[in-house]
Length: 64
Image (cartoon, rainbow, N blue to C red; front, side):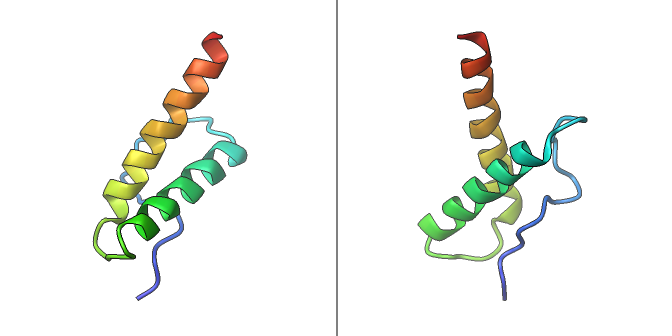
């Protein structure tokens, strides 16, 4: 089965997210999927982890 490369319906992504931000989250989620050995069934966890990382990184660069 292919990995889901779109945001899960229950994602907590903030309203008004830019396409670039969503792309960064998508790419990071895919990296997490690959790091786990492409194990299926963790797509939501990967997305939420990626979202957290990307948004934290964005907040740090905005605050600096």
